[in-house]
Length: 429
Length: 165
Image (cartoon, each protein chain N blue to C red):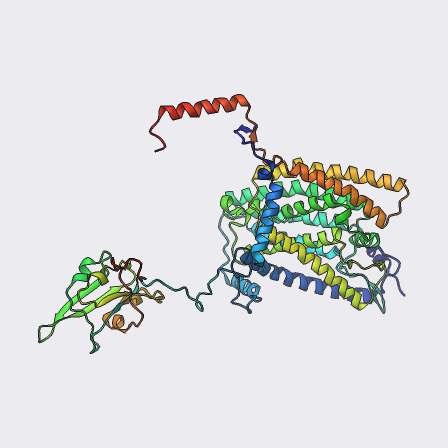
């Protein structure tokens, strides 16, 4: 077996590296399959959004193209968007205006390269990892790449040379920068627990512990979930494109397929975030209630089952994204900022300290990293969740646009209103 | 800094957005799985329209198939939108009939005055609404076309029977 030293570095598993040609062929196949499934999935996601929104609103949704479920609706939309007139306003910065939609879309897709979508497959030539690129930096790569997504939106807003678009772009940059910190911080407990940033190692850790991270690191999951909503510009955090205030925000000046790239990139980001949540907090391709150790390579049926499980977990989060969108109204800008900076960030930071202390105590007590270890963390979490719920439930944290009126001020206001009502007795007839 | 606004003291159950969010999500989920949908699949399904619906005009005819109109000129006079064009003619027996009778359905406001004023019960507004055309000219209905309409006509409101029973 010829072991290519470069591939050995790329492949962090190292012990059983595929020979050169099987590696290349497997990688090409994985790239093609992931790209195709991903693009079709994103297209169908637009349909899912329209269908679910319709059902929630008591309507039927698209059902004219492609049967009762409207399965060809994305194709019809695509054809429509390609046929439409492509406007290029005279006042825009042309190169940036053209490049912005691509910059918005590509990072969302790139992040998929590192997400493991199935259990390692045992083949005749060696173990095939079901991930396009199992790079050692793992979710650091995802965080770095998803941060790039903001460039597309900011450049679109800037290049449009339009007040609304610029405001949308600025809002988006402020929002993404604020929530990225909370997102990064929420992943540190995961890093502490798994001791590795590689996503496949995180999945293995959850599989070997028999407890998913959502149970051992619940607060982290909630912070990550909220931050993911903010990062993908989904309602209730869609301030960059707030229709009621900013027309269409950063994509006001766009038309046809260039416009369509922004919604597509939004859905692509949703899919990526959902897959990340499934991987980091819900055990990735780990098959639930299966006691056999998932760390060894598996045969075809198990690999396919693990891919299906991963797909179901991802679909669940995609549904949650859509469900939340059609439930919650948009945040006010100051509420968004105060939620991010005054609540999410301190909570994530405090949680790092708590998790680190608990883990230190458990390690000191000599508890092995296994099921009991997870249960101990779960118990700590239950207490923390109750406390966090109690604090959040006060209803005062994210609506700070008022100060408390003192009793004297209230008395003065009352006096003003009574004197007014005495002055004009005819009013209010 | 913050503006001082009077804040009502309310029980936490009313101001908690966590509970409100969960309640809202429960509501939307209930609506999503509820099989009852309000959509009317329009070209296949149609809502029933009122008996007093005032839509596309129709000219009623005598048993011989001639328009009942006697070209008295009341309908163009009463028409608030001025959309009826009537040129009267007279045959050898001295019976008046319309030489030209045109209604511009685009200008018509479907008030139904023409039907109310007509002494011969000739012109009617009808229980019909699907009249789309490719050109504006297509909306000018001449006598022949008005006679050719077959849809049911509007029933005028009867003060003696206000609910139409």
